[in-house]
Length: 402
Image (tube, rainbow, N blue to C red):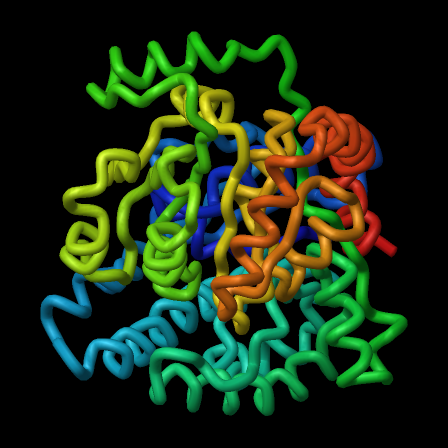
């Protein structure tokens, strides 16, 4: 019996692909060596990112594709039609790799989809009838706030997933909010759903804030004041992360001069000029417009006093930057919506606000800075112990083999 693991994101140099492969897929291989459940483990992706170290006991199955998943390429080429063309090619991209799995699979083999594309999986009856274990990253199947095309896609996707859920052996989600939202809508799935909390790195021996600020100046030529409160927005910049709206609200706050706002990450689907137009002439708003190497992530998480997650109302998946912040014991100011808001409130690791309400943002920010920051840090330390990558991998392993 073999295990077939699919991850389109493993071909990308950004996003969650690296974390999933190195901390989950590789760990599944180690667990298999201990328990000897599968003869072989295969990982399917277009072309494995050079940034990812794959366990030697996993067999890589690549199918090169001329299709890119970079939205910016489609925006430049197709203008107003870019979402439609991107969607069509994305379906083709996933379908090619699904078919490669079907070419290799044998009776009794198991399939684990790290992520999946809704249309292509719905259309692939042969793969669905193999009863894959799937990962559902979001329950966002409602109206999109900035695109009619994407709203239509989400509505249809929600309908198509009914079939996908029916045939799936297990549905893995990364938080209680997503689980509860799924079960509330589909009561019959309660026995299928497994919560594998997104992993937190067990970092220790941190550099201090002063050292981090000095390294920022040395490596990135940004000189920020050390006597201000530093707010950090970190990670790939997407429209649904609400960054433009947050910048506009941040500039309105009464005590704005008491803060630095540091935005760190490359734009993925947001026009860069829109960001620059908002931050020009503001000496306390900085944008480091590049992908950050792993070796420098600590700099930004330790110079910051708080991580900001101003995601829009319909963005309800878990957040990689949030879990990174937990690893560095960095409190958060987050949207009140979705899995992120639920996590922040339940574990008391920061404050939440309504991203549609400026006054709510001002109030939450005031609450954050008035409270003893160490209280948040102590709560984060408790969460770190509960949600390691090993725990996440073991939960997924149990969902696969049992």
